Length: 335
Ligand code: ADE
Ligand code: ZN
Image (tube, rainbow, N blue to C red; front, side, top):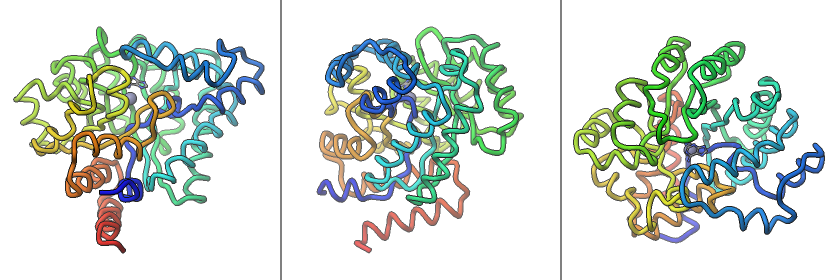
């Protein structure tokens, strides 16, 4: 399988934090126009700081980077820059995460955040034909009350938002902390996803499934430590949004050669490949496909299954999923 096949394969990206696609060049430009200080002199300084030994290490620097975003146009520029990169990797559909609290807690109006993001996504669909959904994420290191405040902010935008997610520091913040928040989100008609089993134990994955009742699981690596959990995920066809280069950079895996993606596929799990925070982890979704396919010597059939899993795990209507699956088959057939 050559690289052009992996890059050209039609893809859905289901695990992408917009704040994690903030490239240092754009960060400097926005910091300058907003007259905000950042603790780096050069782009090389920024990249040199992107060396992490765990999730928290990364989150500390990621929240600092996001703090230069102030105006609706900043969120537009961030989102549109991601779409330009996504187009180069043949992304046809994306379900983006963003962290409202990271911005509203600094006094940025929620309408500016979501307004800029939605405007860029609409322009991206017109310009590149990339369809999208937005999934605001609740920061799990903050309180249940803070999370309920996010749901209240979403109320005027319910037609425009696909679901809610749960992210940030996993250890010490189990999914059950947000049981009531997720029940309310479900009653509001929202889809539910949660990061679980990235650093946290299998018990957190069980909670995401049984307490939060998620429709899809973000990461899920540690689920492989529990045979009962594997059986459950396989039976329910729960999509896992796996992020190989993220796992490597955050030391969730020691080496890509030991990445669990192949095992997940062998076990019949609906594993997808995504970039998580591409500006911080050294690669967009196409780079993740190339790196993991090479490291694990995946066959063409396996990588095509991964691409199809992206569409199958999306929140698109069935007819749209079927259409995307046909474009994958046509690409493979050389058409
Ligand atoms: N926020 C951005 N990226 C994240 C990750 N990989 N895990 C948890 N929270 C995040
Ligand atoms: Zn993530």
